[in-house]
Image 1 (cartoon, rainbow, N blue to C red):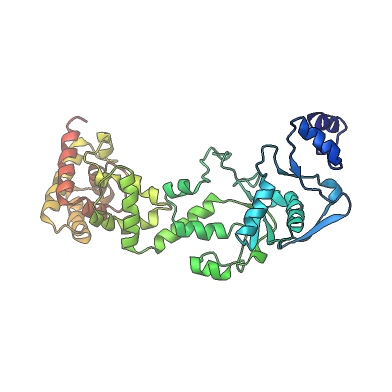
Image 2 (image 1 turned 180 degrees about the vertical axis):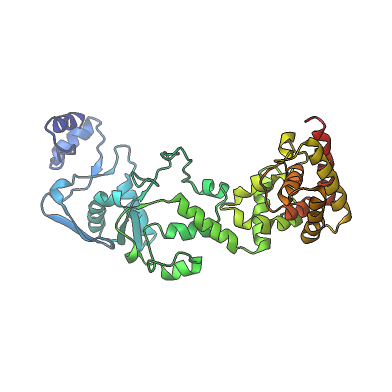
Length: 378
């Protein structure tokens, strides 16, 4: 076989079996067996004519039998090849539809001939279009882990789960890769997809896998979840990140982050300050534009005193603190910026007063006091 393939390549022919042993006599076969040669078992493919079958997406598909070789069914060690195994397996499981990628189209006539040889009815056959990577060039592959821009490409189910994608969004998104219900509707429940999905509406053209579209759809599903449901899912993410959140805390954070996240894991860098026991940040971040260390310290002391006395809820704290900014001769942005860095360690965070409520009065006051101490070294 190796010599044959070399000769075929030298003659610029497609390498393949030349049916050398197809017409051996019984005596020749007995002689080979006496020599200890263990043969493979092949299917005797018709040497003339065509093999035709109907693909649900492509209609009648025809192959010239002269282009097919006598495919191996059992290897010399007695194990079946894929082609025999899949045909027998599908038949025994009473499979009604076989759906494979379009790259398997060239194997379809082999399966057609096998079903005919075994006298079995062939399942409905559909060769689905290829899913391309986001660039639109080349098949989406588990081996290609980064796109042209260096961003990570996820392909395994567990990777999407770990990255914070919702099952509802994944099912909806995947159904629309190469399929459309009416060309306009984007969002479907699982029951609606079961009801509407029609294989005949799958496009024959390859479709690119768009992570941007998936992020957009995932964000939509996040915003459609009830507060308790979303809080429960965010709890699992935060626990996975090493924190020990309380459900009531996370529930308080839901309205602050719901519109700011596209995946569940986006929540961690937004709200980690709520669950950190000690904040670590550069004290210089406390000093807002137009202020110095002394004025920031005075502002934090005033904020500490006001928050200690005011009702500890969002609107009441904001109404109590705005006049303090005026009294100190500060703009609200300057005053609230000092408080934000002191309590969250960030210059940008979810809405300030909702964040303080999630932190709790005791932690908020302790962090304001700690920030004043840190300013002594600036």
